[in-house]
Image (cartoon, rainbow, N blue to C red; front, side, top):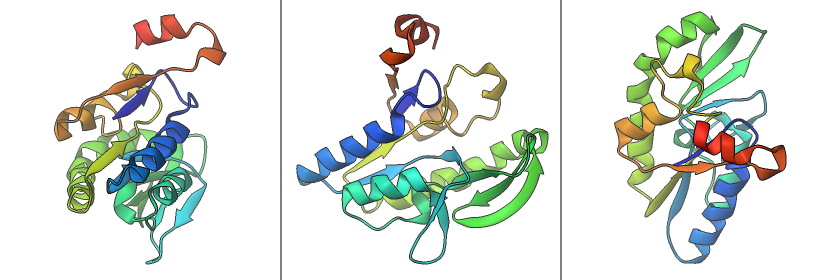
Length: 173
């Protein structure tokens, strides 16, 4: 699992590159992002919505996008609320506070999707969301260490040297 020191440090593109590299080595690779926040959704062949980055990563693997590659997609609707898409289908629209209470109930669906992908993959490249150091998001986490611990996957940390202070960001995270 690739987790980052923050948002926009290159996790999505790095996962896409690794998807392509391992696919070219003959492995059956699948991308996975437990929870994504984006209004830029891609539509799968069966009409499910997933994050556009996971669709790009699927393309790098040479496979069609699948609802299980991004089981929880949050589509912001306001400064404090979002539409919750679970396994490709709209589930609810909730304010942020309500979503934090909902997250622990979504972990079984996230793990179900991960297991579904594992059935057809030699390697699953998992992308975290934002940073695991965001203490306000740790409780009930399904996007970073909460998922990594539940699924038993190792974690690599990604930082962006162009932002300045990357060593402090890595140590702090």
